[in-house]
Image 1 (cartoon, rainbow, N blue to C red):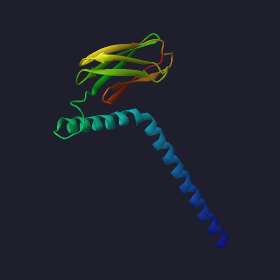
Image 2 (cartoon, rainbow, N blue to C red; image 1 turned 90 degrees about the vertical axis):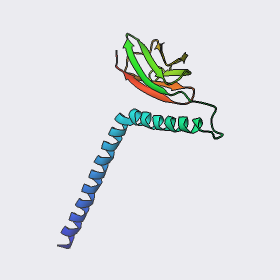
Image 3 (cartoon, rainbow, N blue to C red; image 1 turned 180 degrees about the vertical axis):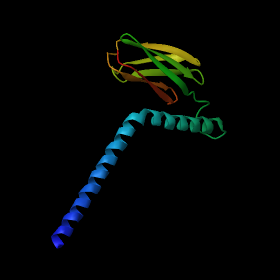
Image 4 (cartoon, one colour; image 1 turned 180 degrees about the horizontal axis):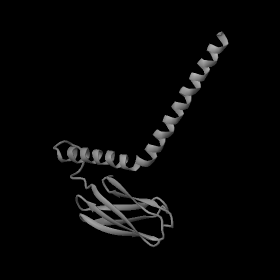
Amino acid sequence: MKQRCKQADGQGLVEYALILVLVAVVVIAILTILGPQVGNVFSRVVDGLSVSSSSGGGGGGGGSTATVTSVGALRGGNDVGVNITVSASTNVTATDSQSGQSVSTNCNTSCSVTLTAVGPNAGTVTVTADGGSSMSDSYPAQ
């Protein structure tokens, strides 16, 4: 009887360990899928705080900070066109996750850049403004 009780305790421990592993795998999958979107939300919050603090009279930043308000990545063959909208005139850099290629341009509320020969796979384009604001958009495989 005593040995049977010990086996049941060991079985319960193994079941709890398997449930814990399953929960960890689900959390990792969710974070992998939603990671870029969550990062964009945090980036917007930080950018909003930066704009608020720099527009006050304190000794913080030097004037207004432009933020990236939208990014659209469209695949055309082996190239990706990126449409960018910003809150104020600023320099932006578009970086491709697949090829590592970066293109910089001056953007006055809206602009477009083309990343050439990015490769056949799906990828993500991240646009970063001079003030540090960034936003991403994904494009499909060829």
